[in-house]
Image (cartoon, rainbow, N blue to C red; front, side, top):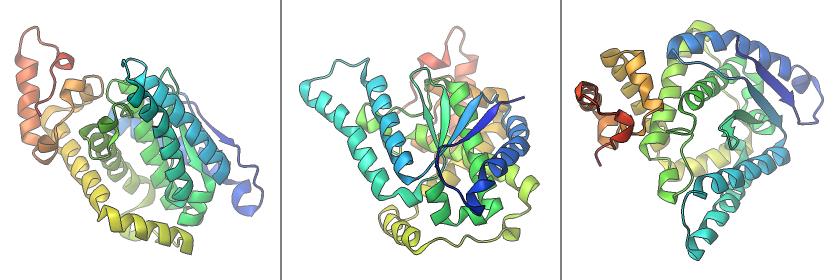
Length: 291
C-alpha cells in the first residue's frame, strides 16, 4: 500500500481548511490504486505539502534553486552561464509570485529524486477548487500520475531538467510526454470516481484568478491544453500498439522519448520502438531520438 502523507503547513483555520487534509487523504487513498492499475507503474512514499501563498512561493523558490544546482553540477560552466544558472530560480520564483493563483499541485524532487507534491491552498481557493470536490480529485489524480512517472524515471527523463535552459521549455517533448500521460491518466481514472465530465460542477474562480488566467491565455493561445491533449492521444495509441511494459520503458530510456513529430504521429514512434527492440545488443537508452 502506498504511503501518502498530507501535511498542512498553511497555519490556516476555518470551516474550509479544517477538513481539507482529510478530504485530500481520502481522495488519494481512493485514487492511488486506480492510478497504479491504469499506468502499471508503482507509486512512492510521498508527502503532499500544503502551503499558504507566501509559504508556497518560498518553498517553490528553494526547490528551484536546488534543481538548478543539481542539474548544472555536471556541466563546466563559463562565468556567464554560472550567472544564468543562478538567475533562473530567481526568475522562476518571481513568476510564481505574480501568477500564484494559477498554481496546480506541483511535483518537486530532492537531490535523490524523491518527490513531494507542493500545493498552494490559496491558489486552489482562488480557482474555486476547494468548493468543488470533483475538481480537487482531478488535480490529485494528475499529481499521482506525476509521482508514478518520476518514480519510474528517477531523473532519466522526468522531471525535465531546468539546465541547459532549452531543455526546460514547456514545448520540449519530455514536458509534453509528462503532461500528456497525466492527462491520459485523468481521462482513464476520473470517470470511474466522478462520473462523466458533463456531470461535474463548473468552477467558480475569483476575479483575481480570472484576470491572471486571461492574461496567461492571451500569450498561450490554448497551446498548453492542445499539447496535453495531443500527448494524451499519443500515450493512448502508443500503449494500444505496444503494451504497457514497452511504453513504460520510455520513463527509463531517454532515447525512447518521442520527438515533436512522433507526438503527432504515434505510428512513427511505434515503428522506431520496434526497430530498436529488434536490434541485437542495442540499448534504447543509448540511442538518441532523431531531431
